[in-house]
Length: 435
Image 1 (tube, rainbow, N blue to C red):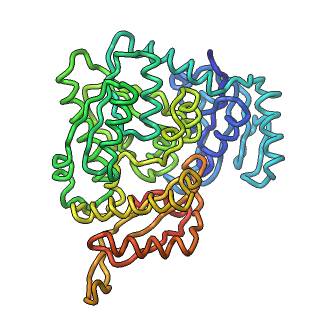
Image 2: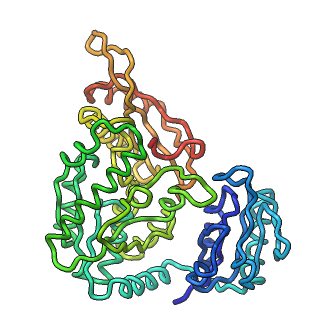
Image 3: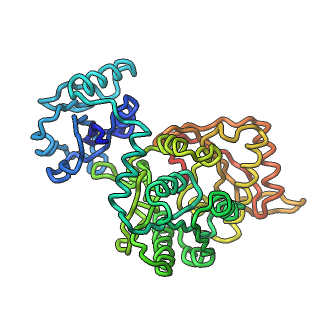
């Protein structure tokens, strides 16, 4: 089913994702595209019913005035301007000055009355469309899926199973940056319980050797991304007919990896972290979905709640939580402290009620006391946040008694740690992860 689309044009505004989500919440599909969208690029977008120009200061090139492309102006589709001026706009709104109710009324009028868009964006329609698109893209080919066991790759697996069945091979790579017990759990759930065609690769030494001494987070992400691809290429070489690589890329990954009018916040290992050349054609059925939409698709596909609603986990794993150059002992401090944190959240009845919670161990040390003697050890930072779409996040206020218990356990049970700190920074100004 061809779904109608409203295109959000990035004219420098900081809230492109918010507007796209507002449109989707009204039952109409929406995507974000740059101000210089070409005629060829526009022709590839199906059923465009209208454009929303989202203005603001150019965050990538300060001081430069952005002009909408001729392709957009000449398209004939209605245009609404938000936070910017446009002579032919059907409606202009000040940048975030109206109440939510007024904005909703204005958007409804523009989308349904002016653009005559149909309310046909739904989880079911998305699943049907993606299964059809996967079949068209892959045909009789075989797909190798990077299966981390997280929400995104699990939902991709479910979609691919429906679309191509036994032509899917899942590969779970243990890069040494997973949470405590996670590799064993992934193998148990997907191979033993779900009957997936699963290959397990122990690549711990390979990854950690490549990352030794690397401090810059962007370099770490790119090393991890490239090494993933190389591992998959090697595994594909052992199989017959693998031409496609499945990935759990989602929309925030793409947005945060940078646009023409917004500088990159951070490269995601599966977007900006990919090598320039590799031997696969990518299959990324979730790349236009926000996190909550991915969960809804997973639930609709029949995945268990324990899988669909589990905490998000970054592709580079604990590598972005072992801040600075990764060492094996500090990596273990991250892994062990994270396990304690997750256990205490479960004991406190907070499991599933807080969107994401984890620990970070930065490469700094401070003086402390252990066993009556001076210690010079690392701090563990606790981060707990709530969000809907991963584009913004608020900090969860943890009970003081819980913080004291976590402090006592972590400093007593995790070697090399003598302090526990709480990260109280929302997104923005921080990102959810530290790197």
